[in-house]
Amino acid sequence: MLSKSSLKYFTLINKIKYQINKSIRNEKNYFNLILKGVIPRPQYAFGLFFTASLASQLNIKKFSVIEFGCWQGEGLMDLEHYSEEIEKIFKIKIDIYGFEGGEGLPPPKDFKDRIYQFSQGEMKESLEKIKKNLSRSNLIIGKFKETVPKFMESNFAPIGCIFNDADYYSSTSDSFNILNDQNKLMPKVLLYFDDLNFSSKMTGELGAINNFNKLNDLKIEEIPELAETMSLYWKKWSFLAKRFFLLHNFQHNLYNQRYQNPFYKNLP
Ligand SMILES: C[S@@+](CC[C@H](N)C(=O)[O-])C[C@H]1O[C@@H](n2cnc3c(N)ncnc32)[C@H](O)[C@@H]1O
Image 1 (cartoon, protein in one colour):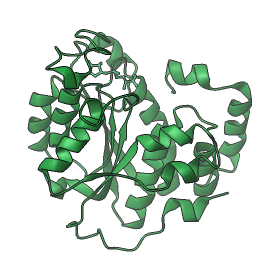
Image 2: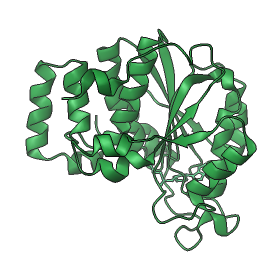
Image 3: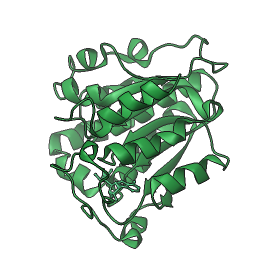
């Protein structure tokens, strides 16, 4: 089931288009729903679709998708909904993980956490309420600083896609520990950042990306021409697609394996 916020933005005409698409569903038709912004929160569907397309072409049968910062669980609900559909299209399995502290935003560390915009305790939600809305997500509760290193010791399918929605520089930096082991990543990892708007290169998610790139051999990079290409089909992609970055895992044994970019396969 889609989240309440997504249902609010799902117009009647788009619901009809979505229902029609169901009867003729295939990779290309579904990509069109996403590209033209027919389905709500299309950026979440795009992240899953792109990663599933890459994974299936590289013969990776299962991948992990992660959301950092889950609040009321609405992002996870939408990931669950789109995963069901995308798994069928690509005959692939997707494991969903949500990392959430359950206490709202933690105390900010310094100016890099954009204190002028966010405050401690904002977006606090009962974890029981979140869990009630979820059917297949794995909710990992606690501060990222503690939960991510612990998670890294467990077994999970390679990480292919990460939705970052934790607002702060410090929280986003803590979440990046998930990228520490290259063997646990897909050859390319798609990262989405929800809170880039009006930040500085030193602060918030953008600051965390820049700091990660300074400290690591692997880089989180912008995706040339993604927003320009996508916005030809739906104008909101002109900013939504700019929120996607790619981590190139150059040493992965499948990094050089040829695959067809889903855009070439599926453009209308
Ligand atoms: C903007 S909300 C997430 C919204 C959600 N993704 C959605 O689409 O509905 C940010 C969430 O990140 C969580 N958070 C921020 N920093 C955290 C940290 N260091 N550890 C755990 N949770 C954190 C907060 O508790 C809050 O619920």
